[in-house]
Structure formats: C-alpha cells, structure tokens
Image (cartoon, rainbow, N blue to C red):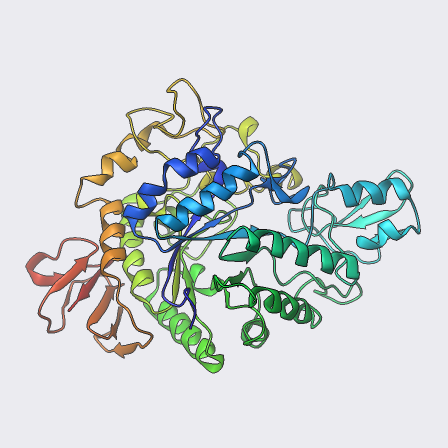
Length: 506
C-alpha cells in the first residue's frame, strides 16, 4: 500500500495556473498564493508540469537544467517553499521529469556540438553521418536534424529536443543524481514524460518505444526512491498494450501508469465498462494501483470532447472547429466527474476541469505557441486550447490570473469565462466547482468494486456503502433502492436518473 492508492492528484500547468509577479505568465508565487484553493478543493497531491530551466521551445518539456527552476517561474528557494507549504496544507507534490530528451541548449548537447564527430560528448545523444531510419517526429516532419558539420541527430519530438542515449552510463547516472536532488528537497514522486521511449532499437519498426532495456532503468530508479522516507511514487506516461503495460508496474519498477484508454473512451456505456473492467483486472494481476484521468495538458478538454458525436477524438482540432454542443458536453463532463471519482484507485484532475472549462478554439494564429502548430505547417492546431490561463475572479480578462487587471495573459482568455471563474462558482451549489468539491469530500474508499445490472445504457457499480450510477442512454431510468442521494451531477426529476447524468447513492 502507498499513499497514492486512493489519492486525487491535481495537475498544475505552471504557466497557466496563477501569475504572481504580474508578467502574464503563471509562476511559483502564483501557485503558492492558490494553495488554499487547492486545500479547499480537497485534493491529496499536486503534479507540476515542468518548472525547470528551459528555452521554452515546447513549454518547458525542453529542459536545459534539470536541477534548477526557470526564472520565468521563480527560484529554487521558491520551489522549496512551495513544497513545504503544500505539505503543510496536507498535499503531496509530484514533479515532472523529462528523461527521453533535453533542450538543444542543455550544456551537454552544446558540448556535443562543439566537440564534433566521433567525440565522447556526442555519445550521450544519437549522432550519425546520415539518418539511420525514416522515423518521423511526433510533432511532424523528420525525427532527424542535421548540424553544421554534417552529422544528424535524433529527436522524437521538436528539433530543439535531442534524445538522450540511455545506453550511455553517464546519462543514467546523471538522472539518478536528478532524482536524488528533488527527493532531498521533499518531492513525493515523479511523473515520467514519455516513459516508454528511453531505450531505442534504431533498426526496428516502432523501435522508439517499449524496448526491454527500459525496465532496467526503472528498476534502478525504484531502488533510489525506496530509500526515501516520504514513500515517493512514479507515474509513467505509457502508451502500451496490456502485456507491455504490466511490465512497467512490476513491484520493483513504477508504481502507476496513466490510463489513456479511459481518457480516450467515447461517451458510450459499453466502452467505459469494458475499459474499467480491463483496467481493474490488469492491475489486480500484479497488485498495482489503477489510475483514472479525463484530461491533461495535451488533449481536448472533456466539455468540448463530450459535446460531439466522435467524443473519443482527443487530438487535432478540425479546420472548421469542434462544433461541440457545450451544454451537452457540460452535462456529460459533470457525470464523468462522478464516474472518475467513484472508481477505486488514483484519480487525476487537470486544472480547469473542476471549473468546467471548454477547449478554446479561436486563438489567433500569431499567438499559438505549441510547436506542433509550426511543424505541421499549420494543419495541427496544437494543444494551446486546453492551456489557457485559469479564470479566478472578476468580470473580464485577465480574470484575476494576474494581480493587475491591465496585464494580459500569455494566451488570451475568452470573455465568456466571466461566469466560469472560481469566484463566480464558489458559492453556487449547482456549479461544476461545487460538484468537484462535494465529490472529493464524499469520495468512497476501499479497493473493491461490484457491477450492478440496471439495463442497457446504464453503468452501475457498488463500492462498499456507495453505489454509482451513470445513465448513458436517452431515457430516464429508475434508481435502485437507496436510503440517501449522496451526490448527483444534475437534477433528478421524479426521483429518476435523466440521460447523461450520474448519481452516488447510499
């Protein structure tokens, strides 16, 4: 058993959470000021997207110094203060670590460029006289870029993000040093970016992911983590089929892995039941903790996604926009929140999800910053639409995101968000924020789950004293016998459960 077994973890995207120094970009001062909000929300931990020194070619996922804070966000002392203050408020802190690649401004890569062909410095990366395969970057275009002396280097993401060569012992030892650096400062775990990519077979189809050698790395990491008293945990960003996924969660490797199958589920009763059943069965095989997540900083927000017929589509906005029914999407997102938080295991909430924010579609092209936008020749609108700075208070932008009303945030906020601010929702018992607060306060405990059969289109299960029912169908359904309605995602006219609504019963 670990602290993460029934935890709810809130993802903070630092540049969009809260701005404390009035430059329009979120920072540590802003994060520290909003810890009371997170405590009142009721989460057990926070996960921070990268806060490290970075040129920000990919919003901090291009790291130039893994053991320092980017001045955009603050200082190392401020980071330590945030960790201490979060702990004092009863919350743990998980930080992102980006081991597959670094920034092209990282000192090690700059040294490799200066040292030239055949040098030991270039052995820390993947340099060749010509591309040795035809791999494409995940951000579009080739995964190979040529340098001034004619050699080529591998980057599975942007050209500014050269991939580390994890076959080199110096790379492995340096990351162990980084783990210890942050664990010594009290962090409670790490979210591992593209955790399945570290070891590569350059001559195999799909040879950038899920290679056997990656497990030796995580066994080394686990040995380090297990020496710390705070019981640090790892969560891997893993895209793997069941058998491969299970390997990562063996008792001496990672504690948890993100459940992308759940995130990608269309609004369909049978699909959700199949994924939930498969998830629980898979994790039970090795005694690992399942995770549940509806969104993150890379995918379309649930309110927009669930307002469409193809609600399992999580990437790449169509040229004409999403054309989502946001009223429908909001009803379903409210129901999905009770489903998410009703399941046994660890649940993640992406900032703004608790406010019911929709994807922002009308960002001016000149303001889009995701590298996918440029590398796709403007065919992939990128992920900026889910990364808009949060609305905290007030009736017009920046909605309390920055201390001064005249300061405009790094991405523009919709004027319609005036009714979506945390302040506007706080005292409204029918708001999305109130729903999340209540769900976190009354979330069932225990690891067991028993399915109930309430007919087609209805997902129902019991966790100890609480029964969760979600109506995916088009007609209201009769609720099973109960003594109390603990929480409902919407009104229950006549005591029946309407379409696209969820309820917790005692």
